[in-house]
Amino acid sequence: MSTSSDKIKVLIGKPGLDGHDRGAKVVARALRDAGMEVIYTGLRQTPEMIAEAALQEDVDVVGLSILSGAHMALAPRVIELLREQGLTDVKLFLGGIIPDQDVPALKDLGVSGIYGPGTSTKAIIEDIRTVCQKS
Amino acid sequence: MPEILIEDVLAGDPLAVSRVLTQVEDGTLQGRKLLHQLFPHTGKAHLIGITGAPGTGKSTLVNQLAHHYRHPPEGEPPRQVAVLAVDPSSPFSGGAVLGDRIRMQDLAGDPGVFIRSTASRGSLGGLSAAAAGMAEVFDAAGFQVVIIETVGAGQAEVDIARLAHTTVVLDAPGLGDDIQTIKAGILEIADILVVNKADRPGAENAVRALKNMLELPEVNPQERRHHQNSPFPDLPADPHQAAGDSWQIPVLTTTATTGEGIPRLAESIQDHHAYLVESDLWSFREQNRLKSELDALLENELVSRWKAEVGEDRYQEVIEQLFTRQISPRQAVQELIPGEPR
Image (cartoon, rainbow over all chains, first blue to last red; front, side, top):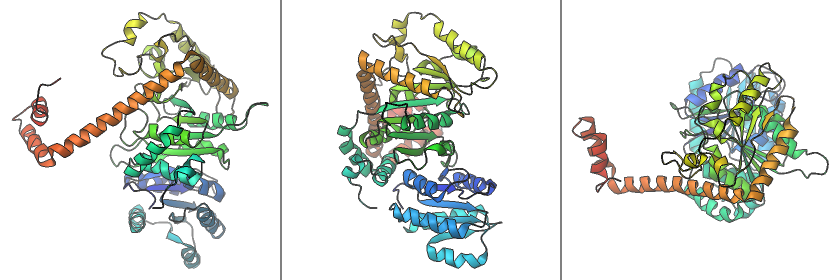
């Protein structure tokens, strides 16, 4: 964890071209109510923009919302850029439409959690708290 | 966590700057030590405050202003710009959604711009307790311009006037009639007044109301300046009443979504900077800022030391007496801090 306070900082980003950000907003709001500080970057972000924001905001967690099907291109690129910038301890979470068959590959790449439709926000909050404690 | 090297911060290395900002934001011991080391390297940046009611377009204006500093007119060098964007923390959960970056997309990918969002974390003056320290980090890291965007301010969130050299107050059409303009508070702290969303109906009325306010005659400024009941005895009740201050507050119009009026605003900010330097008010404001920062730190330190000294048990004991109404809140203070009250 990059901060020594108990305040967990999360960046919620929407890479790619789909414009459906309701899920991202629901999650942002839930994390806020769980006492976290959430930086919301808005729609149509490139992986470069997300990694730059994560660096400047010194977040503990990056959450990507992807409903376009481009997760196998976008998620690895974000991870690569985070590592390149020295953000080796930042955890990545994914939400959206992610087919089961892609999950093992994404987890191998270092994605900490993957959440499809119907996930309770409580589960996401608990998982974020857990990974932020461990490190 | 890895050690933060002071040389890296001074060289403007983004990872080092970001990590030291977090330490300062969290008020850690390491953060305080780093600030000690950075302090001698501060005092160079121009601190520009942007404040105004929610929805007046502060973030969008900051985006345009920073973009202007990065892409100045012919003949001017681009400047390194830091943005500190403050958004409110929830009074219930302590969490926050920080959304100012959404409006600052034009600055992405430019290594000469550093945007940091921060939550107010319980401070009520429109900034966070750590804002001054975070601005010092940017200053030491070589950013020539530090733009500080406050939370959406109502009428009384005026801390920015203590921190910034130049305070820009945003208004937008349709936010209230001209009585709003003679109320005390946020309009009084402006060095520059801006009516944003100038493409909307009612912009002219907003400009006229602000100009009328500025033209009202000053009544006995001496008395105002030294008023004992001022909540900010360290700050001249009206910054423009400082000795020899003859700055004429301009009323400008902008349309931040298109960038209309931004060059004129940048020019006006530059004029104010030059004015402060020439009139020596620059150092006057610097000294005021440092003094109020010192006072705030002293207060914190005294209370936490005193609490440690009294001990939690004794404190609870007195609170119990207070709850059962054996003593009044004022008596409780006397119980906890013996001696004649001042």
